[in-house]
Length: 499
Image 1 (cartoon, one colour):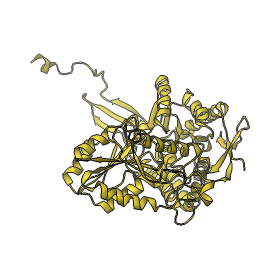
Image 2: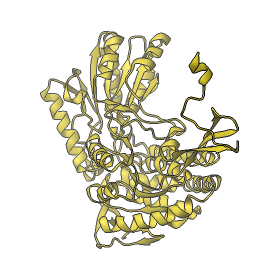
Image 3: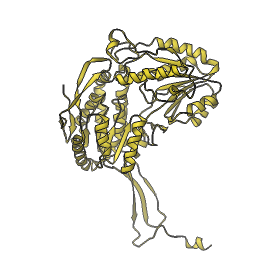
Image 4: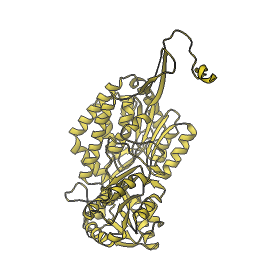
């Protein structure tokens, strides 16, 4: 089946007539459909349409815009199981996870709906008599949203719903690995009553479609989630063109387990953090930093549990870990396991492609644990984006905190301890945008800001209340009802100055 773009209020074929296959990563013989391999001409048409949509949508009262998002949430809730199934088919993670992915979108829709009545400005006293001073929020224009494969519903909604509530029009370019979910999302938006030209969906490859959106002068706002390398290129372009930009990029997240930790609880956390979504989360637990007193016992517990995880099609009951997204990702994971061995790490669990039976048809890799890793090893510093956990032994909490901070990224961290003083020190000292105490490095909630520091991002946040400031402009208004010229920004305190 050939799917289409949504441009200029209708579903249209790509102008060049080219398509790519959307393949089930758990079974490469299963072709979900053929999606548009769009180009710059498709993007040009989408921008022109979005500009028309913006002129209409920006005049729609914000509470009414929120009402559309509320209906979107209702429709997503009614179709939750259907969407989770199609998402697992094209992305691979188990149904329990894709159901959570859809629920994140539902939560974001309902949160966005309420923000339609809460786009607050400020009213403040003027320094002059008979004068009113205030600020308020205004939409910006057309926003370009470039999203990754690992959360096919949640991440597009994190970007799209706040942008729409703020009054912008949007062009969505989903990852080419998960185009079906994005198509369903746009169908739901239209069914909920969003004016057709407010949302454009342009499928295709990042180096073509994504680049065309970033390069286009008619798209003043870009939100990108992806690799730090690509984000740097996007950032250079947006800086040169004076575009507003939100970057959400890589992570090298650590779970710290101290000697006084509840080891059973910490074990559950690291299994979920390291191998949930097959390690394909920017918040995935990629490093396990364990204090010497519990290191050997905890690693033994971890080996036993990780080795028992069941791999397979995420739609099958009992599946714990799904496939990697494509062959290149599996090759990358395999390459990093080799690097770990070369640098002196010991692979104590996994370390190979998972094969046999149905696994031969997909991109499966065994959950892998590497011990004996040093803080400077490549597997302890570089993002792998797969089911590989590097274990680092430390003597003290201070050493653990220092190693946590000693990487180029700063997204998420986790500390397991019963010491309340150490817990609050961790919140204060760990150089990350998010720190969990006695919980894994994954699990952000829709109503709080999400993002990181250093090479993880550029200071903006997804989610929560902060994202609404990114998608809107502050305008200041002054109303002078004195009936005479009053001059601000000069010396209005002559008596004080004379003294």
